[in-house]
Image (tube, rainbow, N blue to C red; front, top):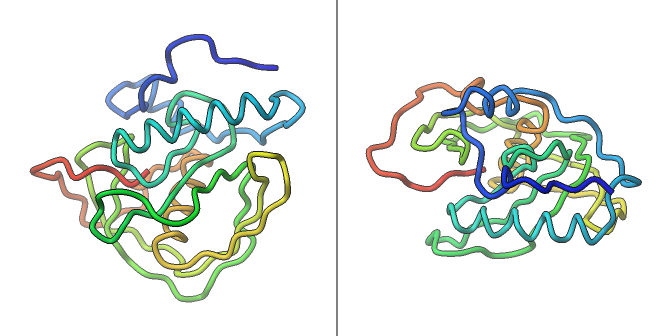
Length: 180
């Protein structure tokens, strides 16, 4: 089993480092479940969740912590932003299978690009497939913010940052916490 033994996964990688930005802009290869046991995935996603919560994010892809794994996690925030609600998602080898014709524009941020926000157009509804943390096939129908988060995280795994798609990019005066 492939293990990360260095401390590169202890923090969220940002574009402030050229090495990190280059890695974040590289498409992550498909996840091979034969190379990683379920315990490794459980430990990795638990750690990712701790980082996501610590940085007040709502999504995080494995490459954002320096891991070349095609997986992401996400969870919806509470309405007041003080915590999380609903299902915690672990999605391995995500594929955007279908999407609505309707798109919506909303402001996004990113833990890998702290303090920067911009308006991004995304599909309002999607259907995504992949595997869960136990390597079981999963199908997720998502709309609204959940659909947006999942598209944002899939972009990360494809080497695309939200600023590549964003309009009206602004620097926040006060750190609001990232999206993913």
